Every structure is written in C-alpha cells, then in structure tokens.
Length: 102
Image (cartoon, rainbow, N blue to C red; front, side):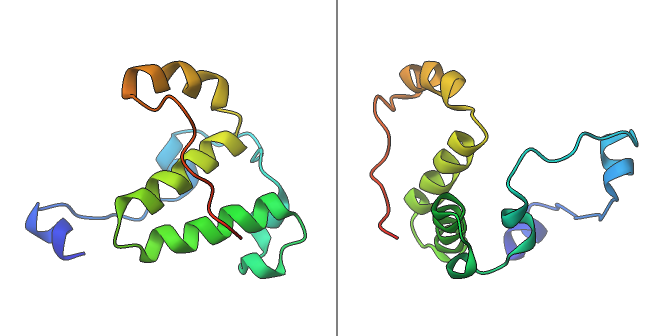
C-alpha cells in the first residue's frame, strides 16, 4: 500500500455491474471449487490445488518469478495457452517456466 500512496494511486471499490458497465455478465468459466474453497490443501482437483498453492506463494514471494509462475499457470488454466505460445516468441519465453512442486 505504501507504493500506491507514493505514486498517488487510490483504490475505489466498485460492484461488478458498475465496474463492467453491464448487468448481464457471463458466468465464470472456472471450476466452482476455486471460487468456493479457500485452502488449496482442501481442494479435490490437483489443478485447483496447484493454482491456489502458486497464488499463496506469489502473494508472499520476494522474487518476481513466483508471480510469473502463478500468472503462467492461471493463463494456461483459462486456455490462454494457444495465444500465449505465439506471444512467448516475442517475450523470449521459448518454453514453460519450471514447475513448482506441490
């Protein structure tokens, strides 16, 4: 929060209808387990457990690589991979980042 203040950035909470400017939003295209279970260890699906574990690591990490690994896995989960592979050539990611053990 200190960085936000130093750059004069203010957070304002908005409801989803106000934020997106429409009321007829599509249903989330993710496993309901991700939306309803807080602890990764309590999740039945290994892919969900892995994603939440990576999220926990990314939020407490001191290295940007943990955030990158979470973002990579999140984009893969929402099937951004096909587009991401083309982008990877431009960004220098010619292969997937190493897997985190869960």
